[in-house]
Length: 390
Image 1 (cartoon, one colour):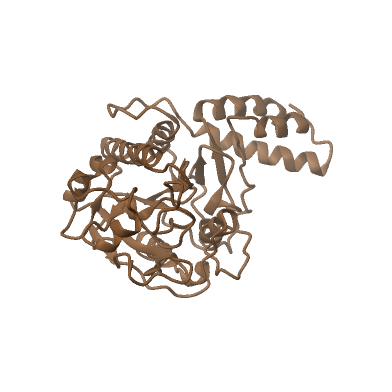
Image 2 (spheres, rainbow, N blue to C red):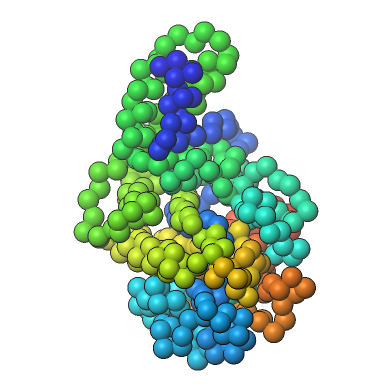
């Protein structure tokens, strides 16, 4: 396989593979990250409508802002005397009742940007709104404290080529399909032993060798008793479970569910997306329990921003700011964190104030999940959340 063929193959849909060359290991290398605990991030691409996800049904302002989109009290899955879940999220109720699901309300950041591209860049890099960084926050964490060399990879972004918070990771992989990943790596393997004709070719072959090495440890044939949902997100969940079950682990996985940019006729597509999310998360929990990894896995959702509290004239919602997100796992301390949406204190653009800086969630992952220093990764100190049991 020649360089041009390899690059063409790596970019071919539906599979994208980008494995960043591992940094050289030497005696002066920093201590390795304790990656025995797995982090799974689920991006809700397009910005999820938080108010119709975790519904503040007891606040009369909610219904007044949404004469057509507001959910009725009798259809909401009530979690407390003030808030409940969209009915499509009913599969998550047992996880909530078991105390393994936390809802962090009001996640956002100062001076919010309402551009999809820029705001997700802020979340992926953990930058300030006026700061531009090139590495994802997970990539910086793994650069500061490398993942053990025997691991399959630092992290895997499943479903597309976008590395998100893994951008620039020393050993980051993006793939859509583990079986095809392994097949393509075998095609690369024969060329990897060919004579090196130039430095450029040597670099390409080194990257190819890293892909071969990652593929060699990836066994996607694990059979589960768990029934995985149909569709793209269900397939991503199945892939995540297969990777989590591998003899060579990874430190982080990133999944994505798209379609949340609901500017018009929101009700039906949003209900369908939340159903996919709930069914996928429940299947992921079941699979992790099946392989004995539920207690060593932390799952968290995130998105570039929320939606505006007031519905628009097209029966949809426009770009907003703060929103709630889910965190679940066997060691999660369930319940509400943050603050309920302050519908009576909207800003001049009709958007919600944030209650919890999203970097506090990241700091919690780094410090309390992985025992890493968060300040050097996040560029400052952020209060951690009481998310995890001791």
